[in-house]
Length: 584
Image 1 (cartoon, rainbow, N blue to C red):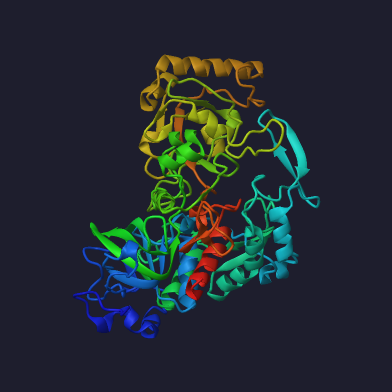
Image 2 (cartoon, rainbow, N blue to C red):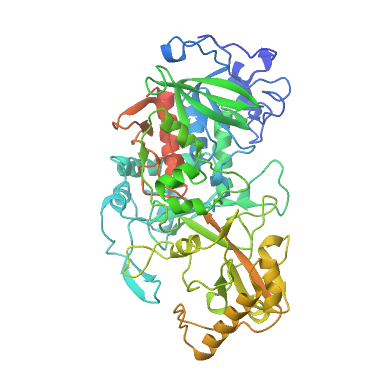
């Protein structure tokens, strides 16, 4: 099939007309007009085209009547860490690459991450620090179903006990998919060296206090923060270690000829012989309000992120998640789960998830967002000491022991995974989720140095202050008399030194010094593991556990591995890209 320039474009300026020349124009690691298209009123910026071709109809029955708008070898859907790794690896392997994203910026949720990368196996930084780790050690930590005997940890239970035990080898008791642990372990060192070679600003290797629980490696690497929006960012704007990872991978993709189209959302995955038969040959997407069809000669990669924004998939994985509309990554990006839903439509199988387990949630006082700074959103304030405040619901009632934090781990007698989120889910909610307010007084705020500046740290609708407890109620939307009675009761319990209502073990301060403060909790679903099932080659599997030809996935779109963070998406995104380039 012959490549043709899109009608109305100048073929001499098309980036794929001369990939080598185009790579030279992007060597400054900037966003060239040709490589970073934002779909603003046209399919290209200026006279440049996307570099993909309109082509004749595909010959197979399922797509026989389709006229393709664009054609490439590797089509990457989603430009988070997994998609960027896939695009860079495929482009390095000689494939023509187009990467699309529904967002107007690259990076997905991962670009906002802290940048702690759990990929090891003997990196130069691990060796410099004297850390001994091999692929076999990583594999053992992923597969041996017991606790480590060389390192211990102390776990606080929800009833105030402490329990010393061997460190977990990984997050939960869930098994990785067949062959996934071995593939991850064997590819870790090579992937780290790949990132190091492209200039990712690694700082040092560190020992994780939770070992391989969620980092992926016993000795994770810290990445230097960079501007999230490097083209438009200014001093004081948000920086993140995830940006330190994402931008070099993006630059590697671009310098090897990859094309990026933003504001382009996939709406359908196309198989050659019908909805659930044949090779995946391309997709339909919306761009500038129009439907476009993009053909992929070697493979389509799914990297559209988690299911956590899809109410349909929430009902499947854990129904009470529907109570929580906000997810980490907002408002920079929103994982609506549509990519996973579309994959299921064409016959992809689904892996399970531990939706309410450790590190699956975050909470922040005074903001709806997790780990967000200007210009994208409000950062919130530090958490008030749970020994000096109470939590009340929409009715103004205290309903829990405030010492139950966001990170209560599972598998210890008396502890419950994310007990806080589950308790809150049972309370009255609004459009932003369960209504839970923190109540404290000025003496406590001053002691802790908490900053409740509206418009800088906290949202105006998530904060109230008044000279009396009753005066707080209107700003919170709770019954004033009820709130006053609850605070009065709590102060009596502090005087007695015993929490007879909810068994909080430490009552450090009464709530009695004006002005009084109310800060609303923002609670966000964070990491998820469930998604389409993949094999060690990052191929998507159907319900018979057979690969769907031409279809690959990684990151939070994919299941089959009990691991969160940046390691899994980058390792398996790269594996997918290499395999697409090889024509697997």
